[in-house]
Amino acid sequence: MTVLVTGGAGYIGSHMVLALVEAGESVVVIDNLSRGFSAMLPRGVPLFIGEAGDENLVEGVIAAHGVSSIIHFAGSVVVPDSMRDPLGYYHNNTMTTCNLLSAAVKCGVPRFIFSSTAAVYGNPAQVPVPEHAPARPLSPYGTSKLMSEIMLHDTAVAHGLRYVALRYFNVVGADPQARVGPAAPGATHLLKIAVEAATGQRAKIDVFGTDYPTKDGSCIRDFIHVSDLVEAHCAALAYLRQGGAPVTLNCGYGRGHSVLETIDAVRRVSGRNFAIHTAGRRPGDIMTMVADSSRIRATLHWTPRYDDLETIAAHALAWEEKLLRDRHGAQQHALSA
Ligand code: UDP
Image 1: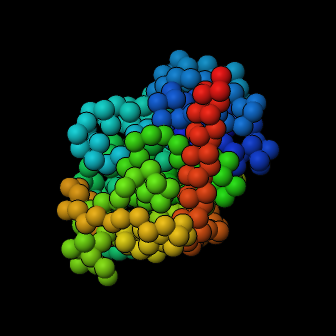
Image 2: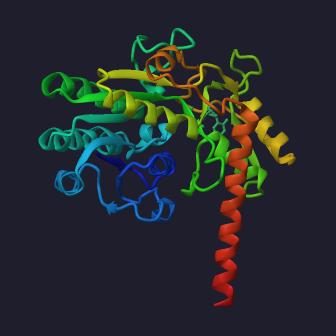
Image 3: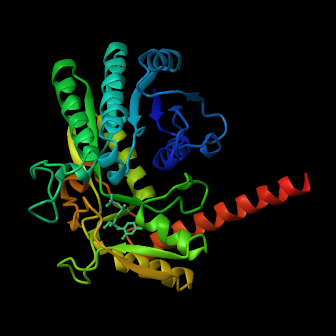
């Protein structure tokens, strides 16, 4: 009954592994450590350092650990990067998922949970966007995930694999106890950048576009706390174990906050008035992206716990402060050695 988590040492994956271990599950991780850290894993969780698309590795792990469910996080996630390096994204996301699915089918793994994205919708005609809205991605990132969704569907039809594809909206925040959180350098996502500014690591934050026809001119996103996202995966696993049919679900709260509101929340929670710089629109940005979350709530009986912008900002800030303390401690240690 072991659960294989690909990308389990990364940002979302590490929260997932923690939740599975706390629930008493047997867990094994494959991660290439390109953006992950082995220190993020609880003691005793086996880590195989390698590619989730390496079929030999995956088949070996499945056989050795009796894997019966796969939760697939490993992949690349930055929209602007995908515009610059589309083939890298098709390789890391689409081809890796293809190989992983091949290994799952070959070894008879019956359950698969897939990290998809709201980027599959492109610019939605209807907001909140329901799952049946047309998928017209505007970036190679969104396309790479949509292609993976199609492969999942076809694999389910041909081989009986049962899956849940979760279309993530904007995943943010950190473990409420600050045990794990986003740690990779070179952040591009809004909330992480805002807490880096609040902790003095950046002089300012750029706001990409304040001339959109929204309430305050900035873009609107459905920010979802990483712990609620992980809870949705736990519910998806239970759903599949109870024999649930393959399904694709939006994973967001169903309400939007603007970029400026989000920055304001970080300023309030931190008590630090870091500078905001109005920059031009960022190419490829979608104006408003909010989930219609009725299907996930009904299908998985999922009830989020942290749907509050200040709580999310507070958890992100506490984690960032801990990262800084740890880094400072490591520097002091190196100096005194
Ligand atoms: N954003 C911003 N400044 C930043 C980073 C992001 O204004 O330094 C904006 C970005 O233009 C978008 C929103 O915040 O409107 C969310 O961007 P993010 O990169 O966090 O996620 P995305 O929605 O692109 O997946």
